[in-house]
Length: 116
Image: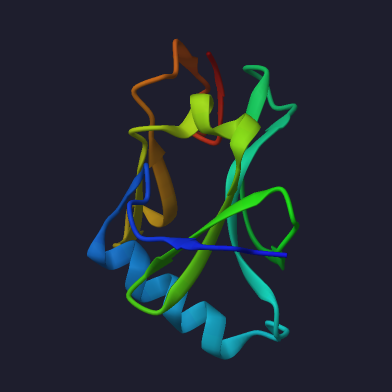
């Protein structure tokens, strides 16, 4: 099914985001064969929404490994997320994952949807 695990992830995951991903992976029911899926889906007020969830690895996915965490991207989503930064904030004013995407032409106020 998967012939090779890549190490050159085309997005930047900050240390804070990676620590939160590891914490979530160990605290929720992530099944064997599942990895963190990062991508996009249609919807949201700007046209596309970010996708961030533990999911089954599909034969068409590209699998990356970052500090022991498997991350999957669909090849068709790459043009929307290449160069993006995934961060995690744990402060009083901002808590949760944030996406900084150089490919986004417009973003919504909540920061979870964009147009390309």
